Image 1: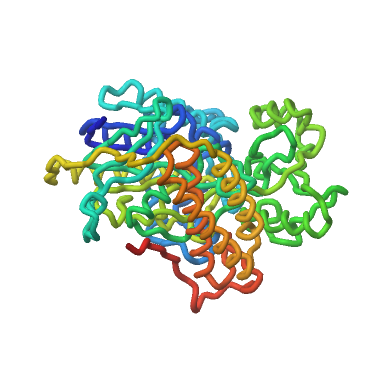
Image 2 (image 1 turned 90 degrees about the vertical axis):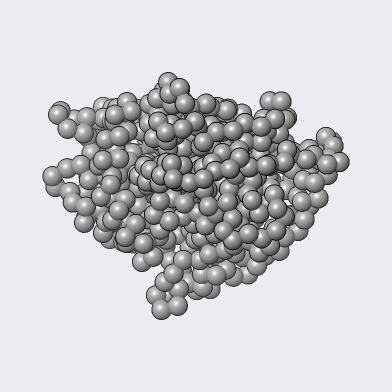
Length: 531
C-alpha cells in the first residue's frame, strides 16, 4: 500500500502541527503519529513558552540569558533569530486559538530558572495541553491535512537507499510506516518530509517524558546518513515527583520560579552553596546539586517546599500540579514535595540549517529532534516550545518555496519487503534489552559520567545491537521492536558524542575532565553513519 502527499510530517506536537498548518495552504499534508494525535511531549509541557512580551524586557536580555545557560557553545546568530521572531510566532499560536493566562489587560508572565525577567507565557500550569488542543483542532478542520494515528515510522526512504549506493547529494522520498493496528507496512511518499518526532527521554531509566519519546527521528535520520550533533547534552529535569504510584510526573520549574525552595530531608535549604541564583539556577546545576545531595546523605529524594506561599495562590497558580499531587496524598500547600531528577530534554539531535533542513535534500527536522544551535550545552527553560514554533514557520516557508520551484518526478519506491521474517515468539528479547539499555544509560551515562563508564556503556550497546539486528531481520516488525532498535541507536550516539567531549560543560559532566575547556572543546560534536 502506498500513500502520497506533498508534505509528510512524522510527529504531532507543536513543531509538526505548526508546520502542517502553514504548509497545508500550499499542498496536501499527511501527519503520521504513533499514538493518538495528542500524545506528544508538547501535551505534557507545564511551564510555558518564553518570549519578550513586556516593556521591562528586551531581546538582548533574552539572548544573554540563553547564551549564559548554553555555557559558551550556543550559536549566537540562531539565538538572536529565534528570540527576535518569538513575539510574531506566539501571535500565530494565538491566532490558531491558543489561550494564554492573562492578568488584567495583559498576559500573566512568569519567571523560571536562568531568566532575568518575567517572560514566560503560560496557560495556568498546563500550557502544552492548551497549545496541543488548539493546534489539533485547527489541523482537524483543515481540508488538506490527513492524520494517521497509531502509525509508527520504521525508516526513511532515500534515493541512496533505493539505489543501494552512496549518493551526494542524497534526497528523502518519504518513509516506511507500520500501521500498528493492522501490522501492515505502508509506504508513504512525499516531496517534503519533516521529522518532528520529539525527544529521547525513554533511553533512560527515569524520565518525565511520555512513552513515545524513544528517539525515533534521530535514529532514522542517522541510519539515512544525516548529521547528528551534541547528543551528549541530555537535560535532566531537577524536580520529578518521587512517589511509587506517580509515573514520571513533572513538577514544573515555574514552582521554583514562584518561590519554592529545595531542602534536604531535615529541612535545610542547600542550593545557596551551589549557585548565586540558588533555587533559580540553570537546570544542569540544580540537577547535579540534587544528585550530589542524595549521594552525600544517602537519601532517595530531596524536597521542594512552597508551603510559605498563600494556599489560595498555590492552588490557583498550579491547579493541575496541586490536584495531581493531592491524588497521591500530597498537599503541596501544607508539606514539601519529594522530588528527584529525571531525563527531560535532548539539546542535541539531527543537525539542521537556519531553515530546519538537514544535509539530506528535502528532509527537515524541527523541535526537540533537531539540533539548531539554540540551546548549546544546556537549554534555557521554556525556550523549547519557542524554538519548535519559530522553526516550524521558517521550515514551512522554505519547504513551500522548494515545492513551488523544484521538479519532483514521481519516485519509483519499492514496497516494504518482509523477506523470510516470521512472527516472533520471543518478545522477552525485546523487553530484556529495553530494560538493560535504560538501566546502564542511567548508571553509566547519566547526570555524572566517567570515561570508564562511557566505555563500558559502548561495549554493552555493541553487543545488544548485534542481538537486535538479528532479531530485526528474523521477525516481523512491531512497534516495540522499532522503538527498541531506535533507543539502542540513540544510546550509542549519546555515548559517541560524550566520548568526544573531553571536558565538563553544561549538561555533560565527566569526573575525569571536571573543568570546562574553551581552548580545545568549545565546539559541537558531530556523528555521521559510515556506509
